[in-house]
Image (cartoon, rainbow, N blue to C red; front, side, top):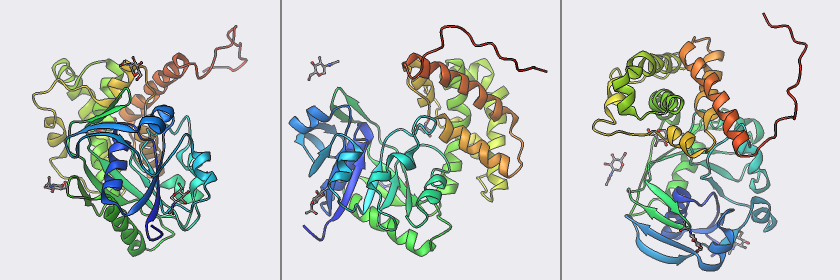
Length: 340
Ligand SMILES: *[C@@H]1O[C@H](CO)[C@@H](O)[C@H](O)[C@H]1NC(C)=O
Ligand SMILES: *[C@@H]1O[C@H](CO)[C@@H](O)[C@H](O)[C@H]1NC(C)=O
Ligand SMILES: *[C@@H]1O[C@H](CO)[C@@H](O)[C@H](O)[C@H]1NC(C)=O
Ligand SMILES: *[C@@H]1O[C@H](CO)[C@@H](O)[C@H](O)[C@H]1NC(C)=O
């Protein structure tokens, strides 16, 4: 047992539970998880999982189950890997602060199985000598009232966010070590050498179709029929490509065509549109906020993406209010600011 790696997974919902099960299935780790909402039930009964990869399971539990990160830190275990599978809502809680109690400097590698772009940067500032691994996962898996239903094969591409303070060879070796504790004959987990390229490639879709559909309340089929695809989303895609290019990332010449045709035949509702519909907060900062910060640093104009971002910030404000995250003052404040 002592030769096993200590692994802590945070956010065992639809996707996180399948990742956790995959790690347990390989059997090289002493696996603990943090599960907040379903803690009592999971601690009691374990998970029931209906999975295309692993079949039907009931009562599955990892070695340790914690209700929050502080409890996981109390064990004083130096974790080799901390795997984060939560949504990334950087305007609400900063991931690098959230995980602080369970990070051992220079020891713990942080695996971000999350959507978004340029996620490593705040970690390099806070933990200059830790490896930050990028996981882009395509699992179709949902948590239905505590039972996990996985309908698509767990396919993930694992790379590292290039930490300028560390040797590439060390980061690559650590990334491959993570793959060795997660990849098994049931899932499809592969090493991908370039996290930056892959995350730019995803943004061609997520920064342009997700965002416009979220704002307008249509699916990608209706977006095309209404003209919005060609008047808004495709011009926004050109802006993503220009930012990537200024950042030394060359996307394929046919990327726009490939992205537009990726939904052929579907009236597909992108995840951000679904979030607005359900009243869930948006992963706005890690999709558009981080991209526009890079555009600004590289002095690339992105007028459409900027308007989309500012409109979505207003939507996010509304969503936060409806979740009771703040209360309006009784009376509207009178400002002495002079507007011009
Ligand atoms: C497994 O990890 C937990 C912390 O989550 C720790 O308390 C326990 O001692 C570890 N077990 C071994 C055998 O290392
Ligand atoms: C969820 O599970 C709880 C207890 O297992 C049950 O009481 C509740 O009705 C379920 N809710 C739904 C929507 O199935
Ligand atoms: C696994 O994923 C890789 C990379 O996306 C792909 O090339 C390969 O065909 C997949 N293998 C299986 C068995 O699905
Ligand atoms: C980004 O797009 C992918 C499809 O390319 C989707 O699976 C994912 O959920 C999207 N993420 C967000 C935050 O919209």
